[in-house]
Length: 146
Image 1 (cartoon, rainbow, N blue to C red):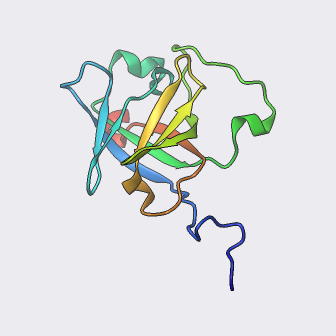
Image 2 (image 1 turned 180 degrees about the horizontal axis):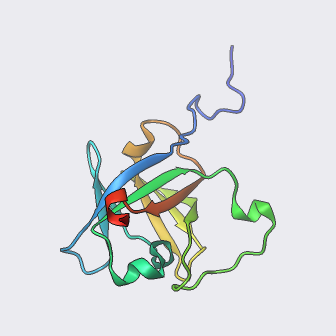
């Protein structure tokens, strides 16, 4: 009899990174962006500090979102954690696994004033085991930066 040691169910953990182009949902009152996947839509409500103070005044119609496995939790680094205000601009956020839903995996972050959730469609993981932590970063397409 053989047994896998160190792997749950023999599935490898998804690492990414995945870069998606999201378009602003103009029909919605909240700041909401949507990306098309093969089978479903990926809806994203960006935390205000991740957009940066500069972008909050003129929200871009298109953003690039990069998601990947976070290698270390912030708590593992033994740095004091501080909650960022909405005026602070940050490069990325780290989200911790919270719960598995029917069609998505919910992650939470406490790095911002109001705890933010991120729902990643299971389709993103392509049948691989979801990571315990993910990072998320927003950039603008090159044509929007000029």
